[in-house]
Length: 233
Image (cartoon, rainbow, N blue to C red; front, side, top):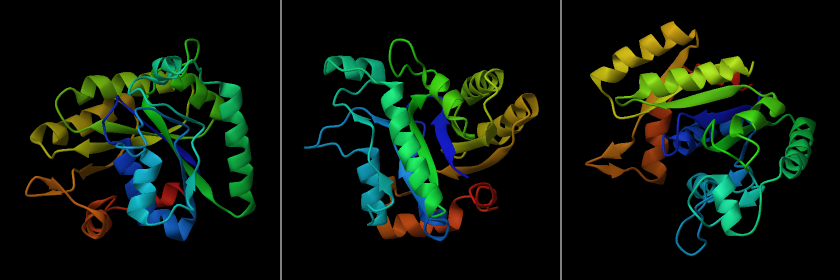
C-alpha cells in the first residue's frame, strides 16, 4: 500500500527513512517516491530530496516530479509567498490522482514524503494534516530518538487520531541512547500505536556513509524485523 511519511518536525529524518524503504524494498515492490512540496531548494547548491534519493539509487525512474519547488527554506506557505505563489490543494490533488492511477495500472505503490511535520501550513488556510486526511492513506510517523521525543510524538499521534487518519505506527531515527529505549515504549503504551523500529544515523568516524556503504548499512540495520515490508505490499 502507499504510505505518507511525516514527522514530529523538520530535519527529523523523513528523507533518510524514505530512502531506506526505497533501497530495501523498492525494487521488489516497485515503489515510487513523491515529494509533493519541496522548499529550500537552490539548483546550484542544494539538491532536492527527490534528487538525493535518485542519486543514491542511481535511478530517477522511480521518482515522481514534485508538485511545487520553492527556493526559500521555510514552511511551504512562506516559501511560496516569497515567490508570489501559493500551494493549491486542487493542483496537488491533480498530481496525486494521476500518479495514483498510473501506479495502480502496473501494481506500484507510492511513498509520499511531506514537508516538515503534520501541522506545517501548506497555505494560510490548510495544514499538512488537513491534506493527509483528504488523501486518506496510512501514515508512518518519523520521530526523533533524542530527549523531548515523548512530548512531540504523543502530540502528533494524538492529532492524527483525532482526525481519524490511519497510522501504521512510528519509527525512530537519530542517535542510540538509553532515553530512546524507554521513550519508544512509553510512546507506544500511551498512544496505542506500535513502534515499527528504529534506524540510527549511518556514520563511521563521524561521517555520513555514501552510496555503496550506505546501501550495505541500510540492508543490514534498517527494519531488521521487516515490519515495514509487510505493510507496503
